[in-house]
Amino acid sequence: TKKCQRNQLIIYLLLRFFQCNLIEGFCKMFRSYFSRVLKESFLLLSLYNTYYRLRNKKRFWKEINRRQALSMFDYKELVKPIPYYPIEAIKDSNFYGQAYALKQYSGVNKFGWSIEHGLYVDDYVPMAAWCKTTKRIMTFSNIRVKGLGSLHKPVIAIGPYIHYAECMLNSEEMNSLKKELGKTLLFFPTHTCCEGGLEYEIHCMIDELLELKEKLGFDTVIVNMYYLDENKNGFGDLYNKAGFKVTTAGHQLDINFLNRLKTIILLSDYTCSNSIGTHTGYCVYLGKPHLVINPVQTLEEVNPLWRDLWETFEKDSSQAQVDKRLLASKYWGFDCIKSREEMRALLINNG
Image (cartoon, rainbow, N blue to C red):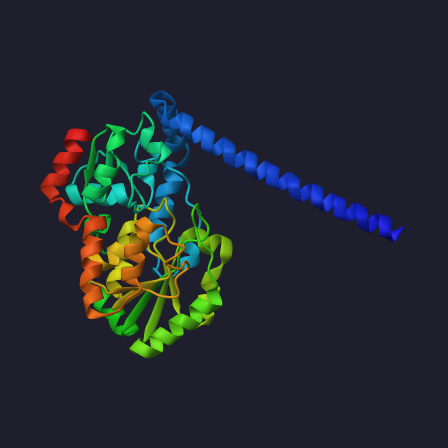
């Protein structure tokens, strides 16, 4: 009967749903386990790296060179996957172009450090930091150095990594583009597609940005998409339809990620976000005012350790600008910047 057929279809779909979720959960658990095993064995990590270096070298560099020539507003191409090619022995140091920028800055080809990618304001120690292959760590500030004290490994603060990146446009190209864009507002949406990501209502966010654009008299709004969000949510099209220009720093395996991010920030006159993130301190360090608008969390929901950052960056008074600089300096380590000679010595002696 039709009723039986309908019930059978419902049962089939439910079984498929649970099967897919079980497979996805198992794969995630296996990847996590395999990643830990790799990070605990120098031999296995070396074999793993050798395999991917032989397999992906040509494809990787072809893709990097292709993307380097793209416009930073060609976001659909910039967020596409990149073949994994481990330039650095430590897997995490191949992400976001940070090691590449530090090597370019110092003129050294070897890099034997692990780099913390996100901002931490407490003494949380990620699993990877405990692993044998993580011998030494670079981070933002001296506060974080103290927070990692339980590791009993060399940890050094080098300040905001954006300092070591290079702009991808020359002065003539930069001036021409700034003239074309006019007074520019740059928006960083919170990451929604990674661990710890927070969901937000994009249509409300668009309304908020349009209101801020009108209030402060901006000619252009640029939205900097995180590559995972664009790949999974496709939010870029919605921001485009609202009249905004969409960009991205690129895929996490793009060695020009940090360089492109610096270029994007330098193009702006004013920056904002709906959450606190690494970008917050980068914007302040590069001399761009930053404001948290339409926040994804209320102050009551925010971890108490982060509350001073959220509360301060939601304000827009002249005193708040001073407070923002002080907080950014404290957590991003503005006083920990290394000269080219100091960074060279660090990489040569411990590379």
